[in-house]
Image 1 (cartoon, rainbow, N blue to C red):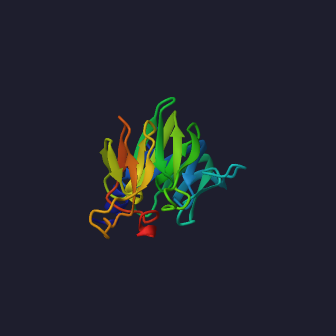
Image 2 (image 1 turned 90 degrees about the horizontal axis):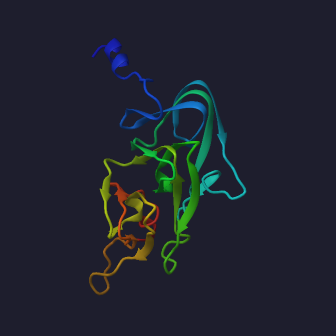
Image 3 (image 1 turned 135 degrees about the vertical axis):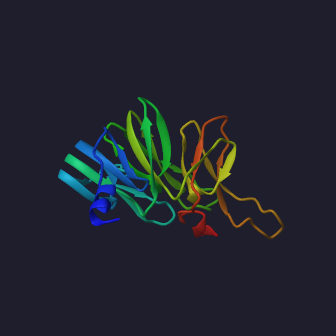
Length: 223
């Protein structure tokens, strides 16, 4: 295609309200007030927008979401003003969700990309088992109303419990579930499955979102 065709076919669209996916890996976040985005995810912006790091006495997502094992952090910043912010993360696919009033979802701290300021949030940690996962796994608990964007490596798979998952491939789950970290059972004497830590979802209902990729924090650190 020529230059004119290229620029037209890949130009952003600003039609519609709320979060918009420009393509499967780019998210357009319209800003008219404030919105929270993952620090480092801003690729470009238009209009009059400022970015401010969040902090609070409690820490957590308002300051720094700590990955319990790796010690790395996922800072979140507030975009304020008027305009459009285009965000992406490592070429991962963007998934948009809308939470109704009082509706909640739990998300792996690695996979939160953006959410509206109307969404309430808090941090929790799934505890370790016999020291297998030091400090556990940090998760973000989001409650609507408002829009949320998460990222996945490839197309996600949504499954129903009971199910056991690799923590590094687990993206999100319904808040009706209370997962735990477990050490994988050996399948032969003196041998392990190679997946030393698993998340156990054993509730009677709900859903679990997994991706075809391991982020490399919990299970790989302890193999």
